Image (cartoon, rainbow, N blue to C red; front, side, top):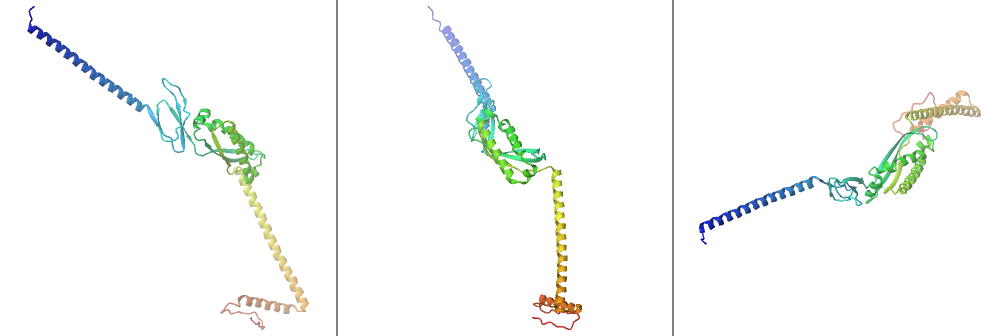
Length: 304
């Protein structure tokens, strides 16, 4: 067997070159695969960041999470609300915010007909508070419009029913009637909410000013003004009558005095003039630098 060194060397070089090429190809494939993996991870991270959002309720709120999976898993309401801090949610998850501090709901009643068929208008205020930690139950059973779905119709009905038993004047002017209405309505709506298992505390019911129509108010003001005018005229007439009677009584008394003293008319008039001058002196006797001019008489009076 003849050993050819040159041929063997060429074969080895060829094999080495082939192996080197294979290694380079594998390295290139690995690099490409690494780039694909990185690109995939970046894509997943981007989707995660853009498909999530943060739920952060205010200090007086609770947030209820409602799961709505797109491809797999189960939907429904999370029984534990987000009460403080924040949480990240998948884009398919919805949330509802509920105020857990006291709120006041206003119901307006325009031209409600009481027992005497004279319409009145007023507002009623319902103060209540959603129970902490029970907002998921509230949403699940009554939705986020829980007042409209559970209490509103009954609340308005009981207000009309209770108020219509009274007359317009009593509703508008007697505070004790409004207070009794508030008490009765509060008791009824509180018991009704408990019957519904509504996780809301009823705190207070209050009624605003009850007013009749503008026409009735105008007529009432006019009537009051007329009554006051009549009273004023009567008072003036009584005062004038009393003044005239006083003058008559004074004249009678003067006549009786004159007759008793046996005076003539002229003597009595002079006496009255002296009495009047004395009354003047009595009024100013404590004042200094006062000059008194008496009437046509020679009589003088001592000033004490």
